Image 1 (cartoon, helix red, strand yellow):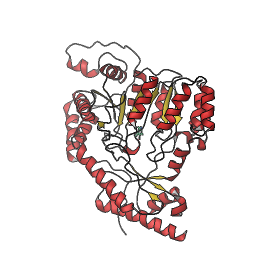
Image 2 (cartoon, protein in one colour):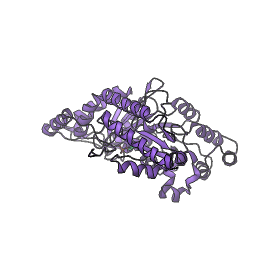
Image 3 (cartoon, rainbow, N blue to C red):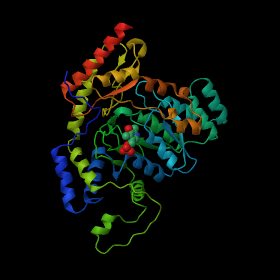
Length: 421
Ligand SMILES: *Cc1c(COP(=O)(O)O)cnc(C)c1O
């Protein structure tokens, strides 16, 4: 066979996108300006949020969200262990403590049962004892208990749920729990551009929602991100943090005649998004529904093509809303398939199919192990999800025949090894 390799991910950049960027390049204004403000307006409209602040990454959006919400050194922020580095690292930027939480077995999103246990333990008369008891009964992950006990029963300041693979978390439950203890909700929506939850657009639900426009994401500007919120004051605080804490941006000074003056009102960062990136975002946002419809069709084709395969579990659409289908994560049951995820990955790779693994749980990484004493079996659901998960290619440019090649490859590998078992 001379079939071309199918890459794991491929951005959908079209002539109209290139023309839009060229327009900016020829315009004489490259960095944050009119096009970025237009992108913010359009994005807010799309996300059904009052305000949107453009930044140069989702990581930056998460960081300024927590800072603007008042997270301070030694505050506790709850983060699922099943996520990318960014969700927890921003907590560390603020010298706060990321307390990790295990996942729901199906969706691999943050386990809301564990959240409820955590909060009720912390509000008990003797939080330390409540945490120990809950851990001994097996209703609280050991890793969570260890970091919580070190914080002496302190209530969390914020929670950062992750809409893993594009399926929204149980936001009603999370918001109720957060409300009870006055905890802020900052959603990591890096996978959830098009997602909804019970009729609400992701981006309009929590205190702040952070989106990513990284090269592999559903909308990509190379690097980029957006923070949405319904609170204009919060948006203003975040906006100031994106550009050195200055009272006026370069664009303001350029457009308002004679106003060269600015004041540094706080310490900020260099997180602004360029007009080059913003037009690329605007251009893709105009066809977001079309791109998403294609993702949905690919996911359906995968689900049909992979159904009935023993030991290969395709993701169920169990969420209460639209799934953005950023990732298509299958789970491989070694006992039934005859080989484990690592070997399956290599076999697919050998057949010219690019795959990936999302995610290595945070508590597996040396920083988190060494800093907080985590062990791999501290979060059993996340550890099991990680051991069995494999992400297949999923992007609008993938053709039906390529999807079928991926399906055939999965079927042939699983037939080969389960026969030999
Ligand atoms: C990609 C990703 C991020 C980081 O996005 P950047 O734009 O690269 O900062 C954060 N969280 C999750 C879950 C991601 O997949």
